[in-house]
Length: 346
Image (tube, rainbow, N blue to C red; front, side, top):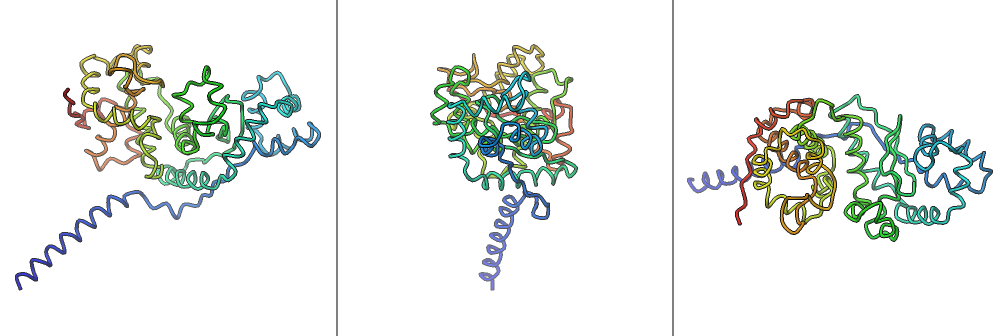
């Protein structure tokens, strides 16, 4: 009988373990009842489909179908407001480089179904947390490397030519304007994360003028990335969310304690000097003055802010995502996070 009881207790122990890990895996909310089916409007295809028609007719059709986006495309994205729609169309239809770029975009993105599916799931999660959110129209286009994810009155654009894959034949030719550390991220797997990030930054949680210290900007950026943690598929790696290489991410994890010590010892957290702050917030191949042999990751303030926010939410499980995003006291988040990573020696 004692053996039976013993084995029964062991059995219950494993049941509890399975339940515990299942809960961890299934902690994401059920969004299956949220009605949303995102379809990406193919402006890039409609634009070139109209080249066999009179320019004025194509202009009128695109204006009617795409509204504000077409106006922005003509006057701001590929034009400068000095040319009419038909004039812009005529230039594009005669530009061989633009045709080649459009051809490559169509080849890479023949089927947008996977992107539409992932966008739908991401924005279902956005709606779960923020039910009154107005989901924009998504429109694909080619701009000649002018803009990647523009936001308009009723749309978000997807610049297909800026997601062709890091080995695209075009990116080597534009390296003076778009350096390799940026163009290596111009790949299809970045489409949904970049759209989600842009929407979060521009529509849901714009930066406040009052957030002037480096710490407040670190926490704001960290909150955006934590929001992405919650709404993007769990399969999206951290490296894609923040735009690091695997090596850069590993470097940050190895020297996390050292980085935090550097920010503390250098008295940077409450610095309000814009130029100094940008060193730790901006894109780049690495962070100047940190690490050896240019091995450091860029925008280290953003990454550390992300880890602080993650630790804060881990230590305060009753805090909801909405409460986190609404919290304006960066010092409070730091204080209640208990963030103190270990220093790597040697």
